[in-house]
Image 1 (cartoon, rainbow, N blue to C red):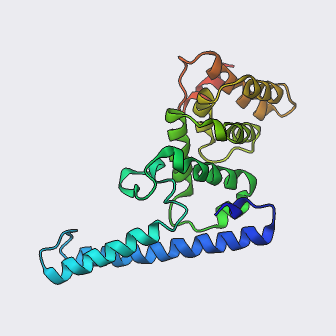
Image 2: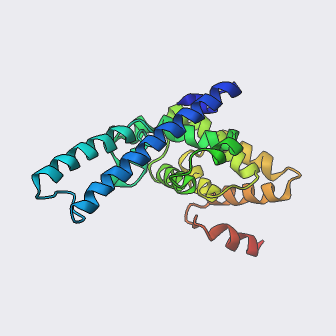
Length: 219
């Protein structure tokens, strides 16, 4: 799975193809699972013995195929009904960082990959969870680099959530990186860096989807 961000293009292509195939397997299993639910009168626990057996079999395939996808390890970052084999944030964190890195380092490949699940929503949930629960020491440096990359631009969907993550990984190195961007020639990146620094300096200030626009209007 980590070959999705390999320096070797061939390995990345194979990893993307494998991930797409596993997601497609789960998509088909999900359709079959829902078909049984529909035939059972929209019930997950049908009274008919034959349908109940069919439901158990369909659910087993549904869960097994899900556990093979890139989304299984980050279950704890997603909606509660998807928590399966990896219920802990710490166990899922390497894969959450992988998804964020994939977008940052290979954005075109990230966009072209299977789109059954909204990538923007997945990114949103990962960053929202990191902003609330923090990041382990093992991955702080990588997330710091991803945050600085997002501030440098170009802006991508949901990048605004990195502003809240900054508070959880605040450090001298992070502030030095933001200061460097703030003093650079790219005006848009400079303003974004100044905004994040303002949120680190005063944690009472809001960090939401409207905060940057409101702050920008005051400058």
